[in-house]
Length: 260
Length: 222
Ligand SMILES: Nc1ncnc2c1ncn2[C@@H]1O[C@H](COP(=O)(O)OP(=O)(O)O)[C@@H](O)[C@H]1O
Ligand SMILES: [Mg+2]
Image (cartoon, rainbow over all chains, first blue to last red; front, top):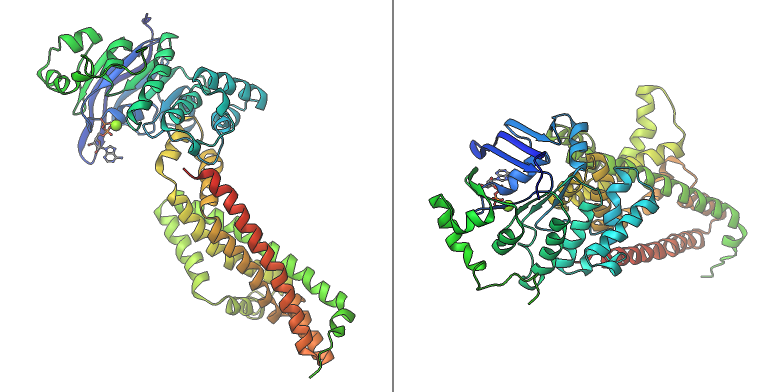
């Protein structure tokens, strides 16, 4: 169950790309242990929201607070913030010249200065956790998309972040590979990981999220429990969006990560 | 016409000395080329447009628009007139060859850096790395692997261009051969030996570089 202390908070955050407000005075908060799913049409600013959260994009106004501290604008502080946030990308972005194991230990080794044995030990545990025990010496190019994304999750977890940000982690996958990645994420959620997940997997959002946020044109249109958003949305825009996507939830396609 | 290759064996140590100097000049200038070329490439890609243009104009374009031989002769014979300091021929050759080749390395590595997709830098930064760490551990290695074929030919060119140092009397293989040919009046035997020595050394080097490329290439293949 979510506790009340905030891990991440956006206060009136605005982000502009060429005069248009991609984020328009967004207020958004995530508590420790909470799983928030963000849904919404493409181009609405969901990726930008995540990239602003870990300062990969500078914001134009407003405040972002992480672990009780304002995310500063000095470089050193930004590195510190990013070390404590894990990010998983749609296209995995594994490092193709490194083995799976080297991918996972790289940042702990050079950023945190961990010893080889500590970093490798944790990496092996993480590989077991994502179901890829035997893949440590393989190169990413030889793995399926689903396997690569699970490695990417392990790589982010290796920094022991306080929050995990997922940007459409299953959108680039073959349909039959989606389930294995969602299963890993579901497992993380069950273990109390604080997560923000941008996704089009409505069944995942319905069954795993503590809160679902509907995002459109730079605004949070509506936010609430999955129950409320999916069965009783208050806003017309939410209803319109969900009527296109909810077929995923109500039967036609079962959640592939569940037992069939 | 009778050829007598005994002249080569009887002057073997003189020729071997030339081989050694050729090796030193080549390896040193190639090293300089890679260090400077890579540094300038990183600056051109990551230090902003102004710096990129300045380096492009004052270093890369200038080096590439004048023949190496002309730069070498100019630096050795003309530059001392202005600065009043004589440099020894070997140092001069190493530096000039290195800087000249560095311009080629720069453009190849720059292309390699630019070919790595943005997401790799984003992913590195998202893991808490600094720009410098990301470039060193993630971007640059991939850029090198991707550029291995053109870098391999640059290395080969580096070995071959060392022969130009003969014009400023660096006692490398070609220069030693010229001296011997003049003394012995047997240019055919001497220059044939030089030809075989260059080829016999560089052909295996080229093969080895190709093998290295195949190894890395198969690893990174998607
Ligand atoms: N680097 C950028 N430069 C200019 N415009 C951008 C950039 N990144 C995103 N945008 C624009 O911002 C809007 C929101 O993009 P994004 O956050 O990727 O949306 P989503 O993830 O919801 O699909 C889009 O209109 C997109 O074109
Ligand atoms: Mg997006």
